Image 1 (cartoon, helix red, strand yellow):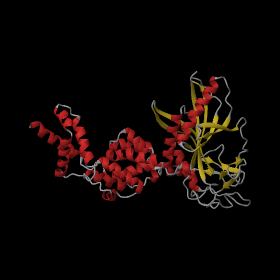
Image 2: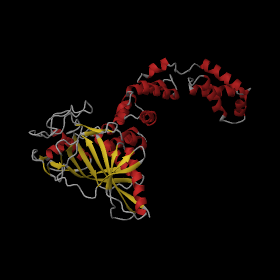
Image 3: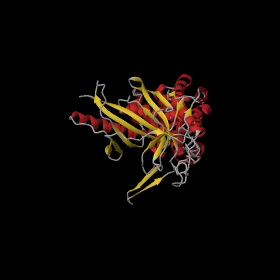
Image 4: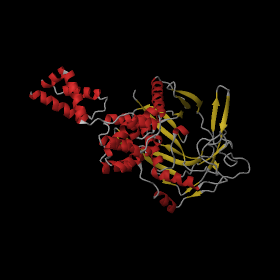
Length: 480
């Protein structure tokens, strides 16, 4: 029996405000444990929360960018449950009247454009963080993150493959980054993903029993966990077994999901309107004011890059999927021009080095100005393009300017004709068989001779000049 996955995602994105949702404490990541908190965000007796207007504005902006309907009347609710990292034993969230509802994101699949529906995007406060020390047999709690504002974006179960889930997350992340409502740094916990997955026979309209997956620290982990869980559930249903409704965690090292807790009975969070916060009323004028602040979104920038810069659709898609990367690219083009040349560096050396170094685009250790100066060294024949790639690697590791690296490592290209001719004559004398092959009509033999000349100069020779001079000397021999 052929099965298909039914996948829905819940994404929590911390908002990029300077202060927390109900108090003036900083939202800055890090700091000594329990130093970014106060009686209000800890919910101590006698304190009153005051809603940060900017968090409402950012939630509305995200909702508009996600094609949501904005609620004119909304409210905050108490979600009652106890967990050690929730000091007041309830979370202030939104229940039946979220700020944003019924939106969608479009993803580009191999089968074409697919629309992934969004049920809601609501505003809430974050909880603290538990730190488990297995060696000491103890757990610690850091309340610095308590009260940091976040939006929870809940999708419809419209995704059918792990790849569609990855595409959805990539598009969602880029939209949040472009609107600058969140920095989406998964390594800092400002973007977190929970997934729900079930399986059913292809063609069936009924949903299977869903399983929730936790502990997903990257998009790759989301993909691998969904891939594993789809196979596990498909195999089980194929054997006639029933899937347990449960929460499972992803074990990255073992590449498997592991049961955490049963979800046979839904939690009763005893929601009720937050009595200390007045309802949120949003006017048409405020919505339009926020709409005007929405910057160019990734799909719009992609279309512009293709239309105005004549970039290949694939290049434009990859570059614009990441705001910091697209900003880097545009700054380079603004200085240098020739978008395709810059795109070659971005799509090649930059993405490769980022992957190898495991860094985000926001942390690229060279500036657009440095990359442009490197390309100009190639344009001026100071170095070859292959030597330029070696210089780039040194720049990426050290942050040094390209001119400094070229000088320190003696990498300047040899373009003196007399010097190169002497090298080429030596290569021709040392390789009579290749010379004879060329004379016999084997054009490929010239490539070997050029390669030997480049080897003699340790890659410093101007390759175009070498090619021309090798042909010139071989033609002289041929005439004789």
